[in-house]
Image 1 (cartoon, rainbow, N blue to C red):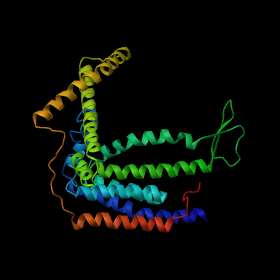
Image 2: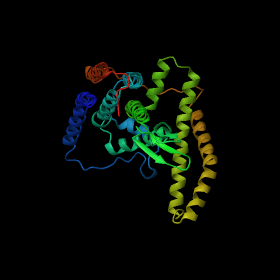
Image 3: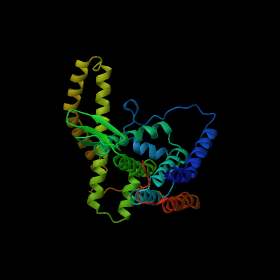
Image 4: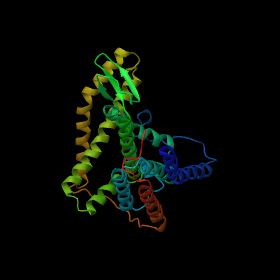
Length: 312
């Protein structure tokens, strides 16, 4: 009976999955005569360290109102966390994939590669939830692995908790990626300023954000320089090149950071960062892609709510 219920509940995932498939077909049809290629930015081969801003700059939904995008991303994140419903989380994952890749026309390979970074940390962090230890085997355990000290077991309860955690975390990450991969950093800081966030916090966030990419860009250039001198041809050379790069990275980055600060002062920086903010009004189309899916996710939450939804 529970299996039949879950099969019925899975039908709620069909609409967002159908939207994603239709969006992928539409995108493929529009670009059918274009050669498939990767953009000259991203995490490939150490090129283009300002990848997040570059993705947002090239996004086709970059002209959406930034307050709407940020507010909607936070709303989807809260729905994921509060609902504790894997069907809602999976629906949000499918829909944010559609918005980012199909509407925003971000390359699917780049998007999946970006999702792989937090996914690795999420899997590693959930290992201690999935596995339990016992001196005797469990009769109802899914897995009993004998060890010298006892048994490593996976019970239905730990598997259920791990799956629910993955669903919530991945749905929340997808919502944040939808926001960050379509919204320039200066627009995010502008929205925080309009929300009356303390000026000092905004300035520190901006400086730290920029300095992270200074570190990344410096590391990529130093690594490419070492590779051009065959610094990674053998294990011994690779270890030596890595050590040399790591030891010089902070010093070179500090020097470049000082140069950036001097350039800011040369442009009359007085402690207040100001960026050009383009007016982007909210349109009916934008409201449609926000209101209708949100109402659907709330409906799914109401119709499938049963405390903890996955029973193994």
